Length: 453
Image (tube, rainbow, N blue to C red; front, side, top):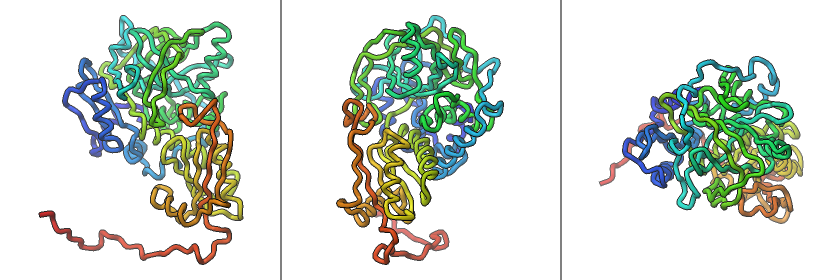
């Protein structure tokens, strides 16, 4: 699982990969095809127009596909990720989970000379995007004071052969590192790693509550992989690269330098507007002999990735605060969560709403339902909302709370949030007893269907 090519092979053997053998334009056409296939099989574009190497997209837009790679069911994935967080915290700092330096790293088989990031097959995704984007690369940086590694994912717009502009959200560890380096007039050195294992992606998007500032979260990937993450010494910067990546870009985020970045079609479904943002000076690029560029379509891919780690973090946090929590699901990845619980006393569901907002601050809507409601079914959740929710006493409004800056409803970093207590009254009365039917196995019956004329 540490190798993207191996993940592709697993998916193909299980009928979960589609090879696009037609030549496809990197400007809009590739993303247009991907949007039509979103949530289905993973796509490998074998002939991106003007480039020699293929582009993979959709690796994370289906939990069933991800589950196949991790060897888990889609519904078990959040608990699996949550267990990895817990195991890593217990073993943090030990040789069992600390990354190791690999010799002859596959990601350094070829060095691009001269440096030219425009030689990488990076697509223009949405119709109003500002340019070609690296949308799914893991950034590794080191704390300017402690040297602790941080891994995170950021978007990069290609603006020249050795130049990128990027977005750094408020509250992220990388931005904290950069601001401390900039205050000293120094650049922040980074590596940008494209085409890494899904285990490394999970580590890079782990919520701050699961991975504190003073810990190297790459250890989470070590737990998932069952072996230490392999790193490679960089050629020109201090932070290491991911040895088993497809491409490694070595660079530095320049101090006191801002250039236009955006627009970019973001996960919220709106364009992140153009602004003067941070600039990366590229110092070296290495790759595999036969690499695959890994791109990401904002939408279901982000929902699934952030949802898996967010659900794990929320469940771990709130289940320690109160009993009765059985599951958490984030159907839209960042802004909405459904909590499944059987409240032990009146007011417990409302407490769970507040605890969920605190556990994952970007959330704006939290719904709490009983354990008899399938939280993965929108119809079931809506049924609970319409039959168990009283707006006069079950509505929770949190005003002026922290919000995710990519959501257009957030103004000056603040937003109003809402919670819905859709649980039965405690104690549950007969009026809320659900209609039940016998559970049968349809495979035991002969079912015939009349073909269409």
